[in-house]
Image (tube, rainbow over all chains, first blue to last red):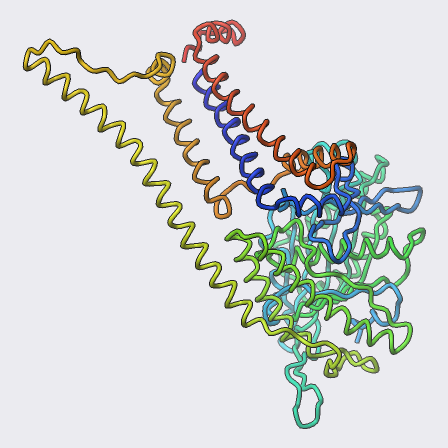
Length: 90
Length: 490
């Protein structure tokens, strides 16, 4: 049982360690320019969490993905668009 | 031509489902998309009627948030909708070349050149009664798709109207859009009537989601992240007057090509092998679009025919393709060498330790043989580490192997694992918000993110060592036995 717990613990921590290490490598590779692009695109914790990242302008390097919430209101519907940054961006 | 209803409404949109040289297959709609998709595709049996009925149903969830999908679905069920497309193929003229002498477009009739039908969006039903009715409808839809009895042409012809009637009756708040999907990838989406209570913008949002749904069903996302396919746009087809219609016809083609070219440029700047390869793939699509759809516009007086497109020029991708190919070769060679070097280092390290151990053992044996009074040598290994290795050899081996695997994946991370995730985006969001709060600017925000990662990596590494040390402590095992109520030992 202890061995199993050790393996599970080590697998999880090692995976997290290397995932964040690779993410840091991508952040370093992107550099300050990429961070500036994110800031200009209005990316923040709130907009990422709420899916309300603003629509990027045509010159932005930040790619986004869009979705929609469809809320039933009486006999009709209310359409609420959502947007976040692309999943292949760190 | 029933498929040309897109010219009769202002709520009309046009886009392109990427494919290479008109190879969209209607019989494969919904195939290979993954779990959660029900599909149905039957050809007509009449030998004089070449065509088929295609039908696909998918439960889709908007996942534009940082929290896990299951949590968002529980807290906000309206992020889930059921999307369905149902249509039958019809003949359509397909442009093949421009006659140089006359300047006219030669067309060939493709008997299954266009799939025409409806796209349905069925929203989440908050009311229990409506939810039961919709669930029953979905059960009927899926059950009908799974029917194994043969379908005759009359049954297939009746299927479309029957589906339409059932959805309108049993799915409250559902929205039906018309669509026409050409084998060239051109897709037209339009509303026969506006949806009550929705603004033109909201019609556009829904049409875009319908477009993404059609792309997911009809196209294999190969050269980009599947869940983030916004590369080719859906444009509003404006046709209030002739000039506007002509502009619309040209502009969606131009913008589709621009976006493909732009996406290729963005991928190429990433300086990783997988992104370069994706760039090459996107180039192939851009070339295919340039050849199949860019040279022609639909004739505004007769949308069944085509006229030459004189307002948009294409790009010559030969040089960029060659340049990207060279960079791929260089990077691939570098990656191969890096992988071989890492393997040699790992093997060399183990071999060195084994060689050292055998040399020490040989020397100590020789001393005993010679009866020498010299002190035998010992390889100094910290006691806790030695105890851990002796007591948990399998665990040590598995952990080491997993660590080495991830170390390789990290160094070759553009070929192997370590794709971005919500966790990394969460950290990015936190740091960007902090930077905005404290007015740090881009440089300060970048340093904040880098510092956060360094702190996180250090914490994880320390916790790994401490965690393993704690677990190998006999006191921990006693506690575990007490908690789990049994002698679990190792």
